[in-house]
Image (cartoon, rainbow, N blue to C red):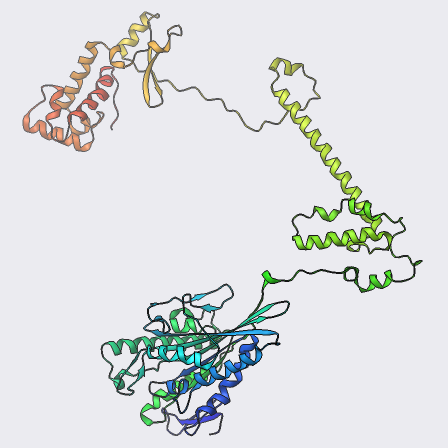
Length: 600
């Protein structure tokens, strides 16, 4: 329609048209110079201000993106024209006598199947994309070549361009199979104080075109390359939509391309998007898709800022004269009549005594050494001038001395309180060492310390007496007979004698020695009767006999007949000799004493 708008038929309704409004529209008769001078050249000036800029070529495959960015020897594209003008600007701004010294470096890379490859060093392999603490995107290990003229740029760029991956399809004999990114960095250093530094980056990006594999006829490797290209361009569209909708998360990290373009899309760069479209009817859908993407990208808002820092290690030391230390008003009053009073009415002190006097600023050991030295110099200067000097920190001299005296008195009082506290602690320690009888005779004025720990008295251990009924009757008849008890002491059981005169070391080690053989035989007979006549429920009353073992014993008895002795229990399947030994120890004493043992 004109230089800023175009109109295209609506494929959904042929009676309607779709209108698009852009910053500039270049038709078929436009030249490379028109595109460069109208849209790209104005943003180069921002690089000298320490800001970033980027130029992207977007569109379907075969639409002329690479021709727009590179061009030909007869019609140079955006990249050679931009480099030529940028190098000319840096030479003019960095000439002798100018305040800034400028240097230019270049890097060239491609994103091929989600791999970042250095075109200046083909042996570097896949590189990673990082982000520094200030949010700047960088690629560690990427080759940087310094350039001072356009001849230097061609010497590095032309061999690297031949390393870029290209391939033949039905639509293009030299189709770009990767996204190419040329990074030009402009570093500026100020020659005079305060020695500022600026850094501006220019991204020149030739995107691979979106492909319809039905028309390109891609197969095998070409099909895989086409899938990677379309995926990265799809993520690029998602990023643009997320920025326009104001979503909390923008999927920059979903693709290497969008991660690298984080500065250009919604970041800190002046961005130019050149959308290449094909006017043929067979590319109608690709043209509509490219126009829609360009219209959405136009709504993205970038916020450029200047990347500027200071060189702290080369800062020149600041030396202030007496006039600068006093300030303009104080210096003017110092040059006034002699009879004019400025300070306090105290007598003027000698310079020697003022320099020997301890200044309160000397206690500020944690302050920066350079700042502390300047403050001490100011304090000595004011002390040497006496009443003619300006008050330190806007405080009169007399008031400052009163404050210093008050602080010293408070310090002395704190020291006295600390000494008194130490004396009280010493008295408390001496009081604790006194005998309990002497504590009762002490005067009630002595303060007793609070107990910090509660002492608990251990309860006596419970004692369980286990003895046969007959033995109890015998002991009742003869009261002098010793009664042995079973005491649980830790994990071991030991016998103790109730006779206090007998030492503990002579206590018996095991309870079997305290039972007569008749009682043992009686217990074994009881177990044997229970094994031969008892039911499964009765057998479960024995220690170490559960439901399963009780059923095994009843089954063995029905198959082989009654048990002749207790040891025959080992012949039952599932009962080992070790289990038999623990079974006898657990049951014979209880049955011999007339006690009923509970189930296991």
